[in-house]
Length: 154
Image (tube, rainbow, N blue to C red; front, side, top):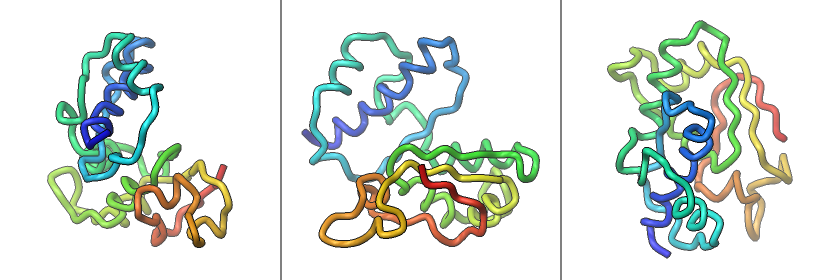
């Protein structure tokens, strides 16, 4: 499949929110180029079998924009991020510059607002070793290091 397959993953993620009446939860998406090698019927079956107000990632903001917007409005040290997939969006957040949501860099915004990151991934601390990295740690091509906040690997 092509990048279109990756864009439909956003629709798959909206199904839970929609099912539980929580379409108000902000949703962002990775807008880069990965996913052409990901195949499987689960996402296809989900997006074709159930209703959702969002059809593709083109209908939502970038994940970094949503992270920065939500974090900027939260009290200091009050946010827990549960990352259950690729770490590339968190890495992009940490590298983000100040913007309309906050005059802080991404690293400083995370340092001030986030109390814990819980990351799903195996093989820690050797998750980036050859020949293949652990799926969630290496699949997005990025690492999340750099901020000194607690990170629990689950």
